[in-house]
Image (tube, rainbow, N blue to C red; front, side, top):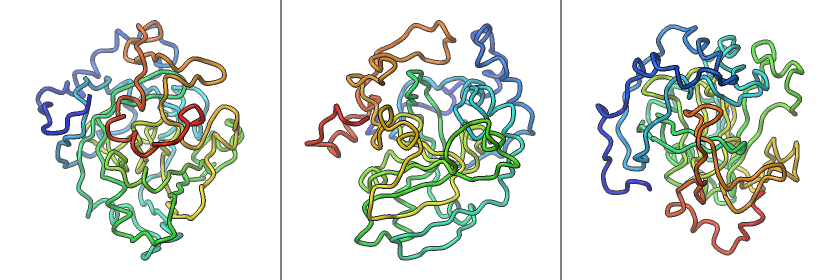
Amino acid sequence: MLIKDADPIKSSEITSKDAFLNRRTLLAGTAGLIALGATSKKAEAAKLSFAKSRLSTSEKPTPYDIVTGYNNFYEFGYGKEDPAKYADALTTKPWTVKIDGLVDKPGNYALEDLVKPAKLEERIYRFRCVEAWSMVVPWVGFQLSDLLNRVGVQSGGKYVAFETLVRPEEMRGQRGIANLNWPYREGLRMDEAMNPLTILANGVYGEELPNQNGAPLRLVVPWKYGFKSIKSIVRISVTSRQPENTWKMQASNEYGFFANVNPEVDHPRWSQASERPVSGGLFAKRKPTQMFNGYADQVAGMYAGMDLRKFY
């Protein structure tokens, strides 16, 4: 369950990155994780200064190597290890985010101008992929609502749309390796975007985001399937109409706009009733999936009166 009144997790109780880097035995024989050595290609990432959040889960974070080595980021290929192998090619500094649409202060904002005024927090969140595997990730970031309030949402703004970078010379998956309609697009309804759980993350494990995790800025919406948490954001638009999202465009019979975690609604090709914690390898014992990924107390009210069976 979520901790609402106090954060029971002391920084000293979270296993250090270095300790996790020396514990790879659980990953042996897991084909998608063999390439984890690629996560150490770059120099040590910059440390971030942040506060602890009362909205963190009390669950133990997934090992650093898995969080940074087992990813879906099709801009770098289909394989889970492809982002860790190839994302070093991506240049993330300088970085600009275009904010437009129904806002009072549209413009092209340097990343540092978005991050510096923000209150950075560590949010230890459950992460549930639509493919029925899961992690617990210690993100560092700030509430999307803070940014939207700063730029001023106009009265007609009902949705927030996001786009990922298109740079095929650095993102090999955009050169035909991964057949999607680029740029990757996602969106949220305005009440979802303003929910306190929704964050823009610029870090993980107390450091700047690695490229393979969506550097330098990604969305994290913990009660939705992971494909909603768009990576390497270059555009945020406030709109009056529901925006397109990539996987619904790709296969509307399998992926919907809301994509809330729901164990009672199966994907057309597999069950969503349970999930595999990736930290246990390919043969990990599955565990039951929670409605809204365990965040029902915080988000269920936004969907009152909606048919939960239609979220795909």
